[in-house]
Image (cartoon, rainbow, N blue to C red; front, side):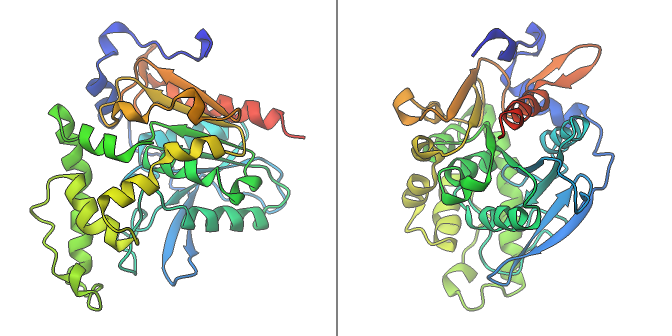
Length: 329
């Protein structure tokens, strides 16, 4: 990594929790509505896509698909800022909301989504490739969406994706689950667990689990850790034996050496969400992976001050996509 790719914030902005919390505190809300699309899934459920603007049918502009983090959405600053920056550089973009994360907070089926859930993203990528065969496709994943993207880029679907970028991803889920149980990071744990528990309880109240007694009778109100919630809810809902099976099979780091297209990975050493085991060793990656380990940035922060607060991350990501687009045959 050369110095031009290094994120070096002002000294008074280097605290990891400040970096993590600032985006939610300083940025205005998203100023554009976007074009929303309900995407039907083969199992009878649905997800929601939000386009920065609906592209022209015959356009040849490159298209970037974004995948948000746990309980994120197009309203997450890292999403809408990246989409705005992409538009400024001549790219169309669309964010795929995981089940229950769009405008409709409760999806139809008992299942939701998880860190290794590549089924819905594959369906979206395949559909977009058929809809816009003349366009090049790129993908950017953040946090949970980035961990998922690591697995997706090792699958056959990667053949239709020109490049990918993975940001602040929990590539070792057990390590991250333990990390967020300590110190100030417990604040983030509560922030993320609360909506997950609410959505699950709402489904119980609506009778979504009437044919699944084991799920219908679970009391999630007293759960305070991801380890417990993922063991009792996430794992059985999505076909895993238990939390250990889920974390092992869904962790993205094991897929890095099988990635099939140019992929940028960005981690910050001071990320309060991530355990040290997320950092891949050289033998765990292949030549398609460009790994950038930043000393600062927190979790999806990367905030500096230059005549005002600004995020370094969208510019870095769009620069990467632009560089890969130039290399297209």
